[in-house]
Image 1 (cartoon, rainbow, N blue to C red):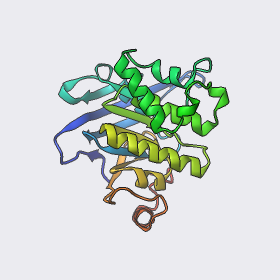
Image 2: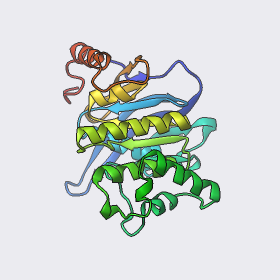
Image 3: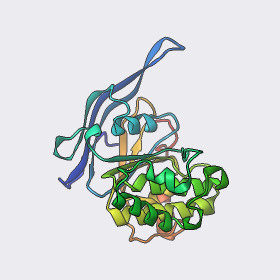
Length: 260
């Protein structure tokens, strides 16, 4: 099992070397190590998924990559040596997190620089997610899936160089989730964004990704990587996706169990 994952390509958007990430459990008055010896690179424009058992530190890692959590022992560098706060980074959470008193268009526009070009891109993205006729609707008037669509448009409206997604399609009906995955892939391909996508769903990761990094139980580290060499566009229920999934689980039966 690999602990140090370094790609062959030297055109990186992201370079991560985390020695340790320790957090305090104030209730138990203890200190716990969430991440230890995690090293990996993400090439420019790659769709990279992070897969691991519940509680292994996937969200903690995204918070560090985004710059929300800077209390780490290690280094996170973007291209040209930039730090997280210096780069245009998007972050999409498990919930849509729309502002309830703003319309669809206003929820997308609010994260822009308010220029005419940004607002026009917002309108185009709303059209792409097929919510043009709901542009003046409020979140309470939308279904959960529609709200997630708005969140995707908002995530891409600033043309982020890197987009972080934390299980954005969890708890959705499968048909709705599949539609959102297609919208995400289309936006990614249009903008050539580098994506880091957290999921516990191996089939979803194979369908979406160029590469999957598998995380161990805590303290988390990378224990395996898998390059997904399936021609795009893909189908979620395709024979190729199922074959890769079965082979991974056969070769590494404990990779998702939380035992390692």
